[in-house]
Length: 199
Image (cartoon, rainbow, N blue to C red; front, side, top):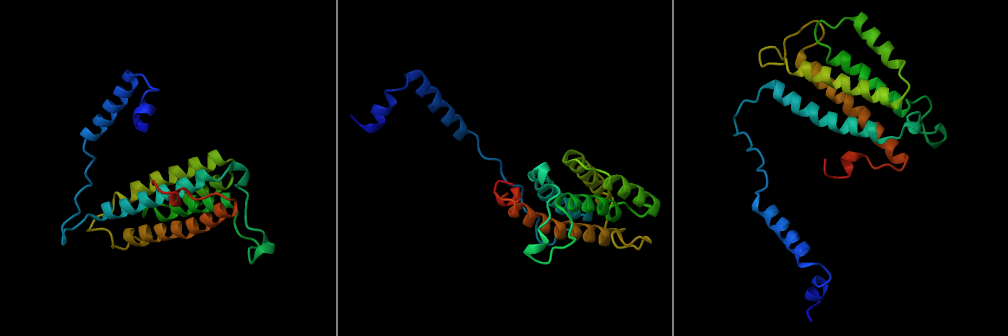
């Protein structure tokens, strides 16, 4: 007897039929086609460009913040393992970027008083849940800001930098601290979600 036939004999024909039907159904539906790439020379709106970059950074940054266990939010590399004296803990890294994002993406009318009040409130957070919640809220503000960037206003001085410049600086700032958070995760035996594939 063929090994496959022998194996199939252990299953009722009805179950085997259902499995074959499910497989056939899966093959019948075509995979979702990737959106076509814009033609060379196409002008992409600045809000769309910045929004896509911000969404990518948000996915990586938030997933990294969520990957670290709460009892490791106070982790910082020990000073004995290199020049790490006085560096921010993992939780402090997340809070720092959350605070800074309101500055970078607050818009031209964002005042120093608002910035201080927001930073003071974020600094008081102690639990992982509250810190991650504040982080996610800062991305809502960041998206609202980049959505207002147009070809006409992107590089107009506002007294608080240009919208395009502040957005670029805000993204670079996130990437800088994301790189540090990745090291903290790996030092605790955690592979960053963005490095696991499937993101």
